[in-house]
Length: 401
Image (tube, rainbow, N blue to C red; front, side, top):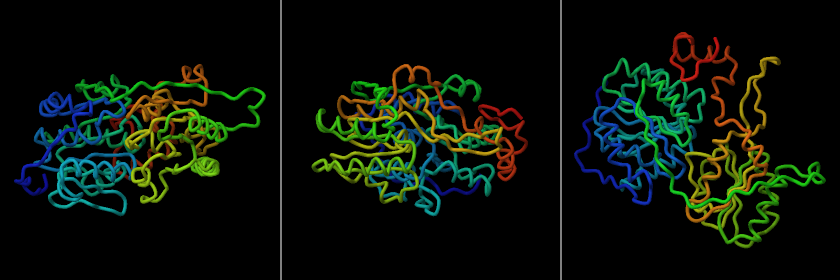
């Protein structure tokens, strides 16, 4: 264990907003963290897991012999969540709560909760294979099952054998709970409901006569236009698969000149200040986003969701020997996550631009990236990360070697 500064003597203000469902499970979660090496928490969209669980770790006595690492798949989520936790504690970012993303480190020696991208924590294993800076690892949004997340799950599973002081929390909104519990030797699973108002779902497909003339951008713009004309005021979130689709949709919607309404794009490559506008710009607003808005990021005020049901999903084409990013239908779990973005502040409406039969026929979860990747590239990356032989690495889902 590396030297770690003593925990600050000041008493932290660990408030738990009573309106968040996870706050009502605080005692149970804190006890589970104290009693078990690994805890799996499945919390529905809007339950407050990303911001409240790190504080529950502190209450359970974690963060005293090392920091608490909280991973997020995306930079904007890491920054936003760190800012929110710090605000709830009543401190500026960089004291008890900090973050570390590519090219920016807002942590100090007194930081106890460090929110990082999963890629950043993976990079830290190269300097310290035992991650001795931390006494607790929280892997949030584990259902995304990127290579980074699966590598981290395997690394920490190995470290749990080597480090008796280390604890792991796996959290997600949608997760194959039985598979994860089995992968971590029967770890306890806690399920937390969401804070949801009723959400009505409408399925829409174009008339066969118009199908050739309408694409999903046009259909989404029409759906938004109908919402703006017929429904009570409320912010709208539109899910698109690509940046270009987002820009085209924004251009169409801006041309409608809805009085007082701001149209905002949101995608991963958008500069941080521009991404932050989805929080700072008051409603009424229309946010057009990729699946970056599907999890982690809760945009306040969303009453309506328009879902194309599509996303760019990486896929290795073995016959052609190339990696591709085709636009493909999302899983049921992803569609449900998108629906869950509305109904947070009042009754919601989710308009799906596909039919119910299509939805029912989709797979329950998106296959893990490890099962959609070029195995040769996975092996090379594992060698670069010094992760050992792929056949011996404890993957949750092992690729066929």
